[in-house]
Amino acid sequence: MPEGLATTHDAATHRALQHHFENMEQQREAASLGMWVFLVTEMMFFGGMFLAYTLYRYKYPEAFAAASNHLDIRLGGINTVVLIFSSFTMAMAVFYTQVGKRRNSIVCLLLTIVLGSTFLGIKAIEYRDKYRDSLIPGQLIPGRPFNPAVAKPGDTDEHKLHLAPGATVRNVELFYWIYFAMTGMHALHMIIGIGLLVTLTIMAWRGRYGPEYHAPIEISGLYWHFVDIVWIFLFPLLYLLGRHLGGHLG
Amino acid sequence: MSEHIVHPRVYIWIFLILMAGTALTVVAAYRDFPGPLNAVVALTIAVIKATLVVLYFMHVRYSPRLIRLVIAAALFWMALLFALTISDYSTRGWLPAM
Image (cartoon, rainbow over all chains, first blue to last red; front, side, top):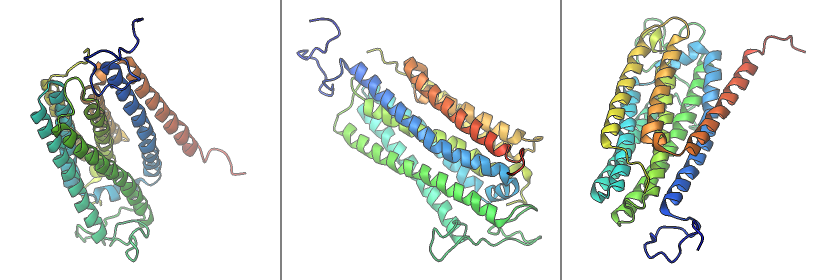
C-alpha cells in the first residue's frame, strides 16, 4: 500500500480518529486550524465594535472620558485578574491532559469554570449598578430610559455623573451603548465558553481524553484565550481612558 | 507525536508578566502623559499582553506556520478596516459639501 494512505487496518488506530484523517496529529492540526479560522471571524466581529468605539471616542472625547470614569475600576480590574487567571488554569488543563493526569486536568477545568462564573457574577453586579443609576441606554429597559442624574458643581455624590464642559448626556449615552454592546457580547461569549467547559469536564470525567486525543480541550482553550484577549483590550479602552484627567471627572 | 508540550513553568511566568502588565496599565492610566500618549501606552501594554497570550497560552509559538498566516491575515484585514474607515471620517471636512 503506498505510503501516506490511511491505514484503516492498523490495530492501534485511536477510536477518536476520523476516517478522513491519516493520523491523530493531522486531525489535531486540522481541528486547531478550524478553530483559528473561526477566531478570525470573531476578530472581525469584535473588530467592528472596536472600530465604532474608536470613532466615537475621538469624536466626543469629553463625554467618553466622563462616562468611562464613571465605571467601577475596582470591579473591572478584579475581573481582568480573574479572567487572566482563568486563561492560566485553562492552559494547565490542556497540559495535564497532554501528560495523562486526568484528575488534575478536571480540577483545572473546574477552576476555569469557577473563575469564568466569577467574572460573570461581577459583570452582573456592574450591570445592576448601571440599572440603578438609570445608565442603561435608550429604552432597553422599558419604562426606565437612560436618565442619569448629573451632579452640580460641588456635589460629590458618586452615583451622579460629573461632566466637564463639552460633554453632553447624549454622548455619554453613546458610550454606554458601546459599553453594553461590547461587554454584553463578551459576556455572551463567556457563557458559551462556560457551556463548552462544562461539556469538556463531563467528557474528561468519562475518560474520553488523554495524551493521544485532547483536541477538543485544546481548541476550547483557544476560544477561551481569545475571549480573554478581547477583555485585555476592553478593560483599558472602556475603564481606563479618562482616569488621567482627574478623579473629579465621571 | 510531535506535539510540543509547554512546561507549566512557562505558563506561570507568562501569567505573572500578564499580572504585572495589568498593574502597570492601571498605574499608567492615572498619570497624565502629553497628548495622545496615554492611549498609546495603554494600547502598547494591551498588545504586548495579547501577544504573550497568543504565543504561549495559545501555543502559536509552537504551531505550524499556517496558523501564523491565518492570524496575520486577520490582523491585515483589521488594519484595512481601521485605516480606511478612520481616513474616511477624519477627512470629512476637507472638501466643501456639494
